[in-house]
Length: 121
Image (cartoon, rainbow, N blue to C red; front, side, top):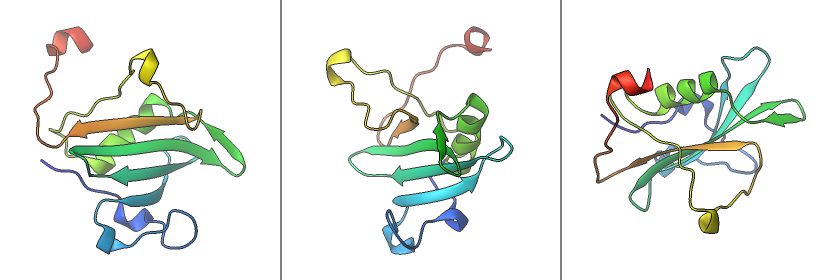
């Protein structure tokens, strides 16, 4: 099991640029599964968490990613058997830096409990 990034989509120049020396940290652009859209990802694996933020973009438009897009990002950045989560934090801890971004998280040193499959299907 492991965290990995879509290396072919790494942003190499301009804002958010990084290179392979940065490991899983950086910005990435990947085609969306929704026609005409791209996904912009920012990935990191520090402070005991693996994290990917996701925004859907098309030209000058931006929107919240769909469930299908978040499922695609999960498959691009984690293995099939990995469990990742989206948090809805306490109201007092809520930060909304960008209104069209969703986040996926996985702790690096803890196991995530999951409900029985019949409850989430």
